[in-house]
Length: 471
Image (cartoon, rainbow, N blue to C red; front, side, top):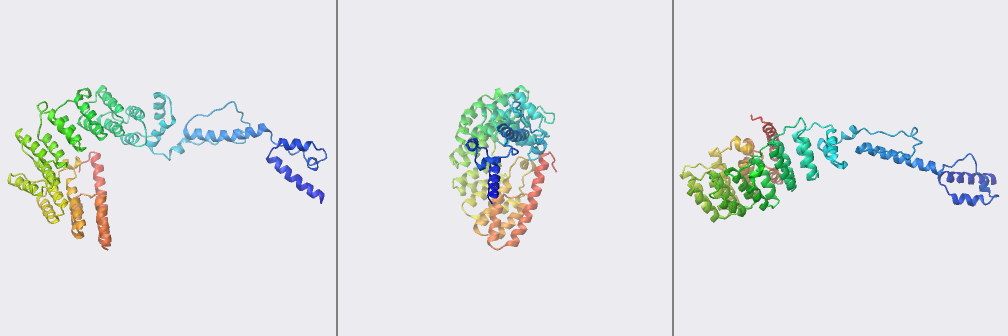
């Protein structure tokens, strides 16, 4: 029995000693030569030396670092630490292709800038090694998404336009200018504009619109005005067309006062046309400033121009915002007397005015007048992004939903779908929820199928036009 107990004690001791090394305890046991524990120490049980334990941990660390180096594409080497277990523990190599399969093309390109490479040459070399079929769409995704800085965006763009698949034209520069302006990297945006001039790529009115809108959206109105004063440095002229672009950007962002100051300052220096006056009337109409609209209208007539449908639509809209609905009706009737047939924009303004005061009978009256007039927007208007017809339908549908006329709202929705106009998700959701709340499940489902087909056709049409296929 004593021998068995000693065997068990000896086994536990050998197990513990194999796992943990306690030099102080070993020295203590050696001080007692008659200890039964000391008597069972077997010379065949070899403890790993300190160097072996250290080397083992180094091997594990090297394996981890090696895999990380393959994953993040950096080199790891340490010649000072030996690797005695190299053959027993082969390092697992991770193919970069396997990792890249999980990344989108734009993510692969943006990932180059996460490696903190030093120097323009090193970064461009790394970009060239990325297995991506570069296109304009990928360039836009790289600079529009993620969190690249201004310098990185410019460096990537300058590398991208040197690639054989990319055409170096004005449309390519639209992308980087808009991306830099959206993130308020104005210094780099201006540098790109100067680079365009050096490369003999002349900025156009679209370029000017992007630049001006970027400044104004960031509340840098003074900088926008300063840029307009120095257009010659950007290869543009201060003329009627550039002035219209600047006024449009200011009025769109509700900086009508600044637009009015520029308008007055340019009087006599730059020739105005009817569109110039209409832009100013549209700006004041959004604020319901009837007196200012009348002043601009008188100046338009005094300058020898005749008001058109755009002029009347802005006047009607402004009167509606000011609560002068009767005056808006008078102007609408006056148009017909003068032989100026109202277009979609004019009907839209009238319908919006009556919806704002809750008079849906008059609203439906002008809506039917719109249908009878067959005032459909032409192809050029659709390509320019104007959706006046759809806005009319949405106003009518929204008003009918508010007063509970769901059947009429569905009829108006189907009429819009028949003409190829797809309502916004907000309007459709409102009508769909109203139908479901009224237990009109079947009608809601049929409407859903029609909306689905129309949206599919609209997406296809948008794709065709983006590729220049007009049919």
